[in-house]
Image (cartoon, rainbow, N blue to C red; front, side):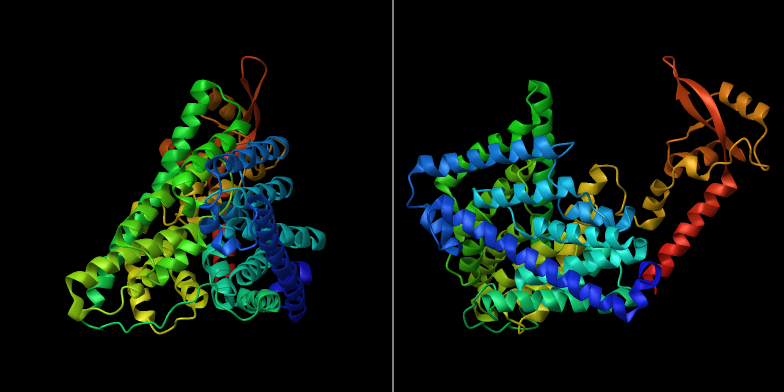
Length: 537
């Protein structure tokens, strides 16, 4: 019952509670490890004021710390990952969609270690990416131990992610909705209860550790001058959407440039993080605000403790630093950087807007709050959970309309310019087509070999006809997927395709069976029906 019908069983909620507790403890442990290592390396216990402390350090110390961090990251990735790539949220989304809720374990653990080192040694990313993947490793272990099916495995994954996000940010509502909206990408009723149980467990662990406090402390909030001021938030949402797109594209551009340079010069993969660390160290000498998650600068933006030119410059520098960090394969997430970029963008917009129309404007710090949500929502492709997490991070529920307006405009614009979100665009660049929905990616889950009729099948295709089609070059390889085969049926108009393997030095095709169009469509239809049943149950 637990293996095949777990989401509908009360007993499963207790398993969800256990997964939530374990994931919450893991998230708190990761956060503590980053803070302890950061404090030891930079020599301060006030990690939330790290960039202010870094300004007092000798320039060569700031320069070399990220380099040594990059060397350590490069060695770990070289030894424990097959491709030298850090795993993060995109891989968890892929695991939910294509691998029954499981993720890579060895590469995943190495990625968590790399992200911890990156965040502790000057990398300019966030902790939510590695925390989500760490939680996914826990759910993968439980799913494999119980030998559960795909639906149960995905629900366990959602529970783990919800608890990790909640424990990381003291945000139980947003944690649960993040798991549903971003990772599982549906709001099925059967998944809701266990995910909420796990999210609550993660929040309790956070509050037992840090107390019931919000991540950011805001001053007395002003009042939005409704009707007159709302158009400004619409406009700011569009601006934030463009900034979010530029941030995402900057990361991908930097990644393409790094890959091209590496291939041209023949540099080993393990050197990339140290080169990126050198660039980050050089930037941090002049702008230590880029070090780590950037919560100090975000807090200053939310309280209005930045000048206009500082807000603009910090936005540009942070985007560049995030792009360098991620292109250098150093690890970490994009949520915290997008919060900082959004807060500084919103603050800059608010300063300009309130100076142009001072009599029709509220406090410009409200624009920083709304901007923080707008950029983060566009980057994550998660308007619902991001709106809520902004409220839970700040404790300010009074400016909900302004945040919602800005978030809706930014996500609507950004979704048209990228593949819906940073994570889905990442996967699209790897030829994993999740952005288009199940109708696109389900075809990649079926190998031709698993659907074909073999020669000993009583309904097998005529062997002579198959050989004649092979001579004409009309065949499909056994290891191909239905994503390759179905367009061939549409183009050729045949009822079946010979299935071959390529043998010998000359790659001569060897007949293995035949894939019938009707069998491929039946398999595809069953998968679509199963997905629809899961998402609407």
